[in-house]
Length: 232
Image (cartoon, rainbow, N blue to C red; front, side, top):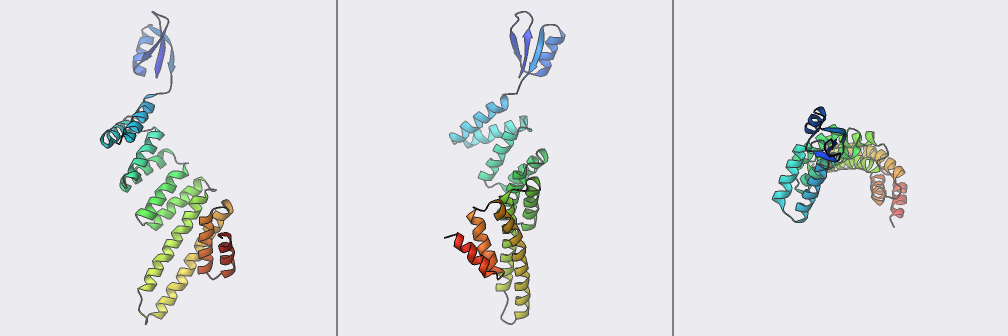
């Protein structure tokens, strides 16, 4: 908002933009300029929320698009648009939105985390997902969710090896054994992430459940039983 004291009345006068206010100040028609927070993004957000509550999809999307165009730097509008893309399962739109958010907020690990989740669960791009989860951890080394999801990426990789093993014929025992050894190595890599995640968040039963399973897969049955007992 742009406000200055109008000389003729001595009262505050609000201007539509900075240029209009500065012009009257230069002409001696006003003084004591004050630039306050622009409330228009908040007005747009109220409208957007109202249209969503009314389930008026057309006006909701039109108003959101208009607001993002007018205020591209507004984080709240950026987050609302991201949620809109996710609700519609428009993952291309969501990823583009996340890339914009990451560029504007490089220290915000949450955007990397959400991007990683889309890449892993929806687009099945495990390598790209792992890059994003690690970026989330770089921004916040104590993010147990990102650490846990890194472990899950390795579980997904191990499951892909299982599919390869199941597709082999009985005569391909040597190849089966090679894949089984490779899979054990992948499970062992996942352990590091799950163990670190548990150190950060020992009460998270999803982490405990994952550890029970992975310890069993790598042959550490004592630790697997220990984790299983915690689930009872």
